Image (cartoon, helix red, strand yellow):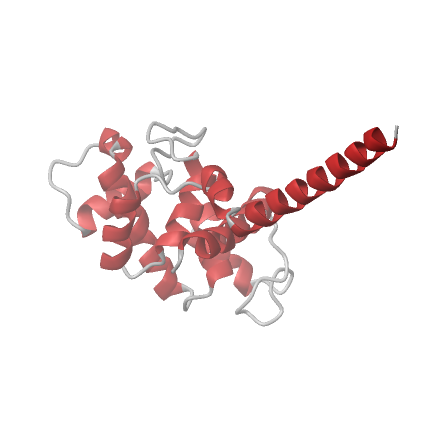
Length: 191
């Protein structure tokens, strides 16, 4: 009987040690699981255009995750297309400015062009909003005209430089999600 009691206690001790060891290993190597939840698809393309247009590749990944879940065939109810959900008007504008020969709206489904235009546009927003990350992300979702208007309205901005309130619920939620994902991507993938 004493042998059975000792065997049970020994088994519990060994089980507890194994559980603690598993938790320690999981915490030390937990990034692999988060990388499954937070992948960076099209990383090679993102890095090329993020460098060319001087934007953070992790911000691009966070935007793509929220805009399309990395689906190159994504189409919004407002006709925004592809990985970074480029609106038709933004695609046409970019085609003129970059320039893109023989541009057609369907080309926005191509990962290379979509990411290129998205990074180009983020660069423009960086300049327009003086590298203010929250304004850039809000403008990517709601449009730079809306954000500029909100900054001029004391109901939404006391100082004209930061937003105290975002009147679009979708943009408010989008901003929170992209900022969260941006932090996760930087933590997971930066050296």
